[in-house]
Each structure stands twice: as C-alpha cells, then as structure tokens.
Image 1 (cartoon, rainbow, N blue to C red):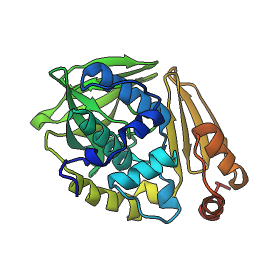
Image 2: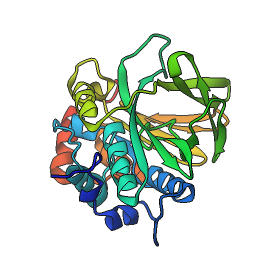
Image 3: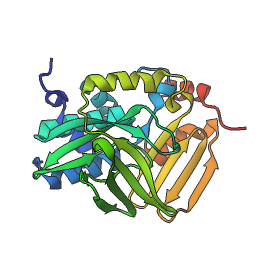
Length: 276
C-alpha cells in the first residue's frame, strides 16, 4: 500500500508525461508546474462517460492511470485532479487538496462538490485545477487576493471573501463571472471518495442525467452537454448544433479525441437521448 497521500509512488510518471506531451527532466518549480498544467489540460478531456456507461468512477491511481493514460480517455474533476496530484507529488511538489462550491449557473449556495488543488512552487502558493472542464484554468494561478492572469485568450482572477474564502472568476464578454468558491480547509483523498459517490450516483447530480464532455484550448472551448455541441470563443461568439446518436462516437473521436470500443459505443448509444 502507498504511504504517500496522493499515491504518487504508484504512478508511471514517464507514461503520464508522454500522455501530456512533455519530455525531458522535470523539477518541482513554477516553470515545470505551468508546463504540466497546460499539457494536461490540452491532452486530457473532461468527460463523465463512465457514469453514462453505468460503471463506477474509480479514484485509485492505478485505475486513473489505466483510464486516462493507457486508454487515453478523460475524466471529471476528482479523476483529473487526483491524477495530477499524484504526478506532482511524484515530482516533488507540495500538494494540498481543496473543496469548492460551483457558482456557474446559479446564485444560490451549492454543496462542496468540486475538487481543486493548492500547490507550492518557488516559494509561492498556486491554484491548480485541470478538472473544471469548459471554463477551467489553462495554467496555475497565483493563490493570492487580486491575482489576475491572461491565459491564451481567457482571463482569470481571484478575489478574497469572508472567512478565508476565495472565488475564482473569469472575464466574459459581458464582464466578470464567478466560477467557484473555495475555503482554506484541507481536503484529503477520502473526502473526494464521498463527493465522488454523490456526483456519480445521485439523481440530482448533473453528471448522472446527461453526457458532458468538454475541452478548453487557448482560443476556444468545445462542450458537448446532452445532445448540444457548442463552440465558444473569447469574444463571446458561439456555434452550436445538435448531435444525433448515430454520430456521437465520431464527434467524441474527432472533437475530443476520445476512443471507445464497440461495446462502449453500443451502451452509450442506448442511453443517449438527443433532444427532440
């Protein structure tokens, strides 16, 4: 059994680095952290297909590596950030888990259901999150009040609220909007097991009722939510179309680089419900 918090000693680091397109030695510094974060987001899509396929979402490192590295699939926040934390720990970074309340799409208080990370590099704390999906960070953001950064064509910022809570914000065409809020309390892998159970099984979880696949790039974001494929650019312009069941597999492959086997394609098609 692993003695490390994030089980980094169980990770095949070379295979992971190859998956995200990094070569050469890696050191626990800010330059490496940025390269790892950007490479991970570019290579590994956000997706909830395991839930739609009726399979459990596993968070142990060997399962995460098999799925996202060997089989070149994606995952959602607990999977993505757990794998990222294992890689960072293996390299020598100090990694702390955090829990966040998603604010996108609602003015009301939501439960803590999102996993994000605090990482120390070059003597500074950074917010790292490779698992937020469509509007997520491309690179680490300094974890300090008032921090702002332009990443590709997207702009992000952090504001400090009461009781040590920080809000991650993004600048949209119509102004700043909150993505999520997180407090200072440390979270541990066992906490994410509980969150993951709710997110992957509860009838009210948005990940249970529909397909969600997303990919963030420097200049655009692609999102398949339910049956709608939407492309969003930084100027606020969007393109969208409905994806029928017959073309779902091809869209997953061409737009998100997700390959499924024949059995998975058949199972997904049977539960996929394009809007009529």
